[in-house]
Image (cartoon, rainbow over all chains, first blue to last red; front, side, top):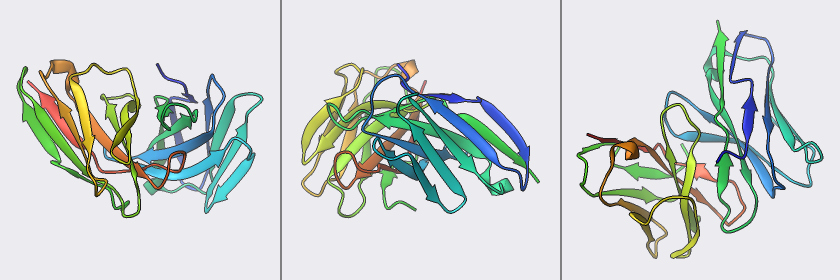
Length: 112
Length: 112
């Protein structure tokens, strides 16, 4: 079963605009990780945010975590055509091996 | 590039056959996890190995088995292949349990 659910399922924007993707989950977590995947290839790790953190930045990426609402968001600022990909959130509950539970992803299309 | 490598890149098998997929983890990483990703879905956790011992298993039947070697590389074996086993198989390594998981490029398995 999927722990995380991304919203929206698909997002289409113009280059230079900001893109926001949301993730909701159901149980308590140890950390939450965001990944990017291009055309069915391997996953690229973007950011890990731990349960005691509220916000993290990495370049044009900003991730927030609200454990009271069991939700996270990924903001990509000043998007580029190269950001076109599927984005997944994955939760680590910290139990029985740090398995990641993924949602079904948000397909982001950035139009030049 | 994450430093995680997988082989082969693509594989075609027929129903009932057996397959072995291989993964070399990133240098300094002692934890390896395997995931199955069906088309259009998020990855599903198969199992994790930590220092050559299984450290958590997802909802997969026993015909999915694995090994981790002293150099922390790993194998995923699938017996009695079924059509539904067609998927992208992803390997991820991490420095420690609960840390970021870095994924390889995956092996695309097609079962005919």
